[in-house]
Length: 244
Image 1 (cartoon, helix red, strand yellow):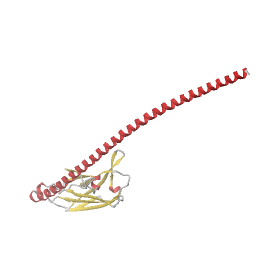
Image 2 (tube, one colour):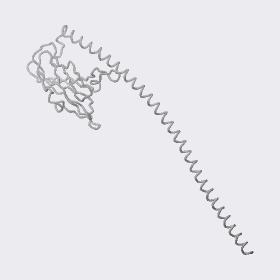
Image 3 (cartoon, helix red, strand yellow):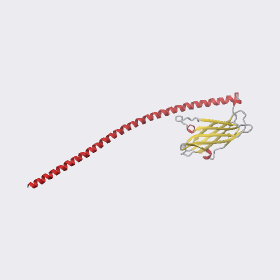
């Protein structure tokens, strides 16, 4: 009987030890999970703070972007107004100079205007180029014409001729007073255009000096009709180089 009692007591002690070990192991695992939960909570709070900071920075950038766009629109509108006034003054100057001091006029070909229109949302473009010459010593004037596009190829600029995009592009001119040259071309959708370049070349003779004229038109300004984004007035860089 005594042996049985000792055996029962032994099993009870072993059971209590097992329970104690299980409790300690469970408490250890609980502490580990609690520590992980605390670390995850801190990380979550840090991420929320960073997210809020990024949202604030994004809002500031958006406000700055809107302000910059408004400033750009205002500058473009002012630029268009000045260009319109300059065009009016130039036309008056050209007229009065021809009447009062025709000897001051430069003899040769000039680009009077260049315009482009698009067919709806398609990639087809029509252009109209008006050439003229000064009133002084007008004679039949002829030369070569070259219209090209300055496009982005990666980060570099490359020129392609309109004659490579269409068969309806004229390559020469011949007139006494003025000439209107019209054409059309199709522009691939993946091409990003920077400028339109118009180049005129006149071979010298006994009445005219050899002449090279280049006009550059910003593509965005040239092809945009909405003044809210860009001016519809063509921004031009005139490089006229008479060759002796």
